[in-house]
Image (cartoon, rainbow, N blue to C red; front, side, top):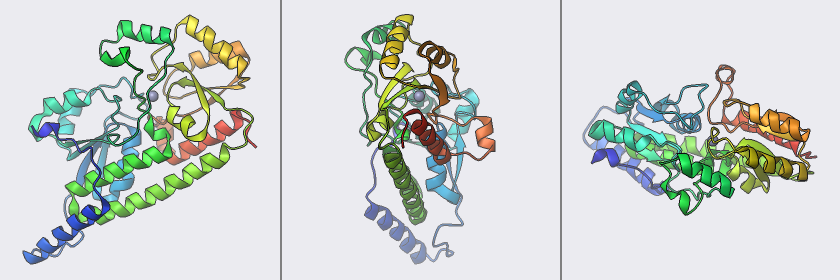
Length: 332
Ligand SMILES: [Zn+2]
């Protein structure tokens, strides 16, 4: 059952280099034309489920891979489903990189329909310590009524899939991708390892900027459009109140909104954050009700067409997030 091949493990660094060395030796021994770095070989075709995974695949794969992203620019990915055409394209890929933690509910179905000819599927979060969502009881009941897919809602909240908003966990996803690429293409393992090293250095620098930038702030509570920033607030000692649940379309009841407005007032919040790929209607309503202003906080689930054209990426958007967080939290 090749279509169930997932790569949840991380290859030790040594194994990656050992594999690369063996590939080199066998190439020499067989008298093959010298392509020591494998640079003449065809590029790996990587399918990424949505933007954060696309960015990692591009950075780690560099010029050794071509990356195609399933969720198009400007589309909010939580409810996205592949078309028949997407499935045909996916069949041609060598590797499918997806976020996991329940974000892409279509993956198992898609891989099953593709069957044995399909790509290797990598759950980039397989080794990541995930956080479960705490939910208001009335919200859980709402979900229960209309969400047949979530059979585990009785026992605990849903697992939070938004790991990429924590630069450290995002780096762990990058490591998983580097290991998968190196296993599929051992001749270029050194390239992937070097690209990973550069990316991890950048992510560490970003983490340091957030740690320093969010120290000494007047406030700790952020109010967001949907519950996407749990990993970020956990990492930097903040607290999140969100209007919608884990998925942006899970709209709260009027009763829940009233409770939220009270919490927001009590916390002295001056800005309500909204995001660009979903309607800002509820954020504006809440902001008006509590006398706050609105400001963007980007969950980086996708780029808008304008952001893509302007060359924005994960790092530029995270730094804009930091600027707006510092404004809202009155950091000095
Ligand atoms: Zn989300």
